[in-house]
Image (cartoon, rainbow, N blue to C red; front, side, top):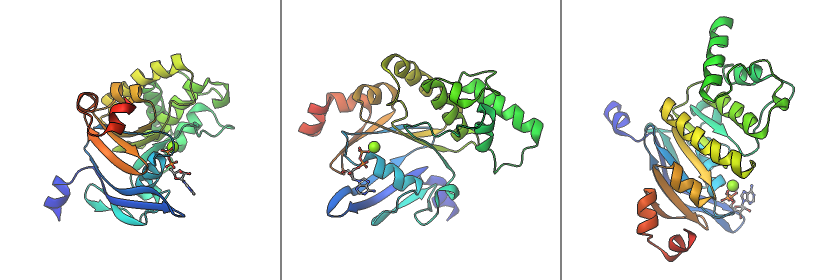
Length: 241
Ligand code: ADP
Ligand code: MG
């Protein structure tokens, strides 16, 4: 058991199926993500990206297949027992709280005393390039800044895996480009594995170690960006790029 866990990938989505009515949204999706990897799920709107991500997080139950984290079957565990962080398109901050209170919420299950908590919040604000933002009401921040607070909050308990569902889609072009670079830096600096969902080909190609292309609930290709671009395995992948 010990040996199996040591060699197991950080995340293993094993032949996962999901149907809504008679619409198949995940058709036997199989994928593995390693420690510290930037892994992207790319596909057009409605291809099943969010559904797969929600099954990894535990917000949705698969009809078939299993989710394993570090070799442990977490399929029946609730989201908060899976040791992962989540970031959504609409930065889900608490509007009545300050920046520090929002990030502190991510640390509510830690046993840090007040001083250690302050220290950790300040460290996280440095990480997301918002030093000194502790006492600002979160609603006074720009969209990009609010999303960085949400990212800091998700990373606060040091998850090994962070799930991000189109985190930059609500932002305008210029901010989005800046945040792409920042997110990549944050990912490298923390060594956190990212499972990143986007419908933006360019975003996937520039940020990822590997990209999984989804279409109608099917995983059509999983490859490094260059290989996807140069050796598309299906017509769909070729046309998508
Ligand atoms: P994507 O994130 O790639 O845009 P989704 O995973 O959100 O795709 O959705 C894939 C398909 O599953 C869509 O056709 C969507 O309408 C359907 N779907 C997703 N969630 C639900 C749900 N809770 N109830 C019914 N249908 C759903
Ligand atoms: Mg989606």
